[in-house]
Image (cartoon, rainbow, N blue to C red):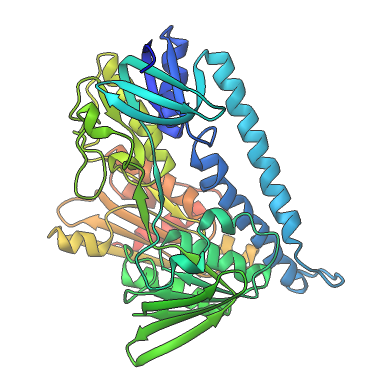
Length: 463
């Protein structure tokens, strides 16, 4: 083995939490190295969050072009150029990568390209991308290796070479008929986008509803949106087998409530969950324990079972969102500087970037019932928020859960225009421990989406 090079800080994986650890520690004068297999900055700016939202916005523009007469516009024949859509996305990614490289340079953190594997406590051997090996050791080690798309053991699925979101975001053509396996976030966002680009789309969801973690009324609203946009949805559809090759011709056999059915298409997108990238990197040799879900076992301070080793983001079982990985970094960094932060009772918001988007923070009704939390519920159709009339976007609703014992907000969901921005206002109210009446009685600008809070929270039943 090569003689180990000594660092103060060693980060395996350059995702959100890891890169912020590296930049911050390096600026503090620590000799810092980041080992990255491929993606500078991790998946978010390269193949996931930001690229997908870039493509989704192009699909929104395509949808608006299709509705041009509704807005008093006249135009000639318009067609989708998927190579152009991809080019716009790639330019954004290239710009983001350049920004990341500048930040590495200015911080002083060393970026090492290669495959890292633990050979002992806080020691990595790196098979360098350009050949050769390096052995690195550090006083503090941070593991930020992320996850990858799960391809289940379904007969013929692997052989069909299905797309994951990575390949779907690189398409330079519009699939004739896209079959989407799954009903979660990736499946829903990509299904609507591809339909708006011109694909015929069929969604196969094994469970009884789309968006399985959401309340039934939210799932039903998404289902109605999809059906209105011409997306075929099969619920309770268990995938039995797949034949053919994605990109050419495929046949998917499914078991539905009314019997077996064959779904034929040209392309398959597998969006059936995520698997942590924790296998084959020698975690056991470093004394790092992995749990049954293949996540690295951490405590509430994100410390692993190995001394001076932390895990960050998805590989640590944190909720699978970039903003959570960033908060993992903040927790660790503050604690290393004398703080006492933890992941306990974090209020984690999230958005599903459909059009209109879905945003949620806090408890859903189903979660409140499961936890035996007594609540009141208020709801408001988006059509009653006059801003939606100016946009010709009246679809959806807002819903809030209020504690029966007091006036605190337990949870909030919005399905409609600018839902994420609405959620942020409610989240701040929740974090401040303020009653819902703050939003009910506030003076909001007319006509804005926030104005809807006056009417939503006026609908809260008496305790």
